[in-house]
Image (cartoon, rainbow, N blue to C red; front, side, top):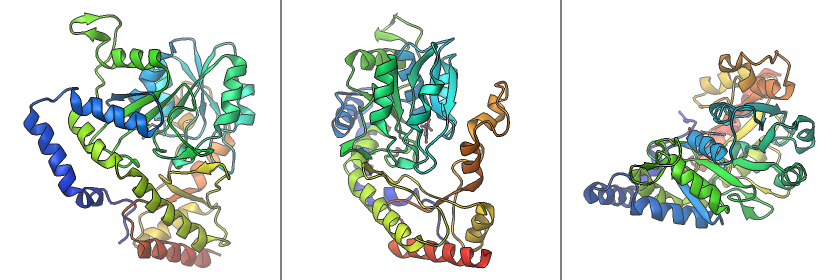
Length: 368
Ligand SMILES: *Cc1c(COP(=O)(O)O)cnc(C)c1O
């Protein structure tokens, strides 16, 4: 059996360091905020080449609080990808604002900058690109459009810790980046966690206040805030793991290269990496019209594969009040029907990646 992702292996590799970090927090008796969180924020900001990092409870809150800090509210519109995890859309809806979907570039799966301007209205406030599957979105044209129309840019970096755009790590290309430390992400906690990075001191301060009941000084509440704090236990765990992120991303990259080589020319659509992109390879996603048969054939061969994502947000029951019909966003719908994510992670042995490629080649042959 080859699992899609092994979540125990990262702990086993770093067991001693992680056990020490956890024991340090438990014996400190300090369980909200404090030095561990401050230190992780400093480390993560530095890693992202951003001046500020603000820890929050999860990735959805990172998106939501960043949008709030940008004054997004009822009546506003935020441009989002039509193909993303639903959290990107929900963060907009939680502000009382409206997500306005834009289709992806069919090759990179990231929001197509050439389609953004047609979606801008007088109500548009923010463009929210997602670095999907760990591939950086094409930020230069997105930032140029935002400047031209006086919009802010919030990046969803939940799948892209450590990815680089034109040589520079993601973290502050736009006004802010929202991160998730959900256990399965490239930088994963042992529970929920999230952060926002930014070079904008005022945005960072507003998020700090919003995450803590709208309060800067205890029992003095300036705005109606939230309880959305990064746990010191998770911060201590993340500090340990951050030091290994580049090495672990390197292993992902080696697996991607193996897949890219082993699957070339077999009839599957493989990931396309523009020359300015250094992906974090959160997921390795292939595409094929007979995806469901391949998914099943892999399962029969003992290989775990997943679909990211089987239903696009505009086709979810959660968004049926919007008047989008089937076919409204054909690229997002085609992806939902055709994408398949192969096993990927820093602890997938090379020989297993080889076996995955072989099983896939075999099912492709059996399928023709
Ligand atoms: C995981 C994820 C989120 C949400 O993160 P949580 O920590 O689970 O709230 C948001 N956007 C994308 C693209 C994600 O993959």
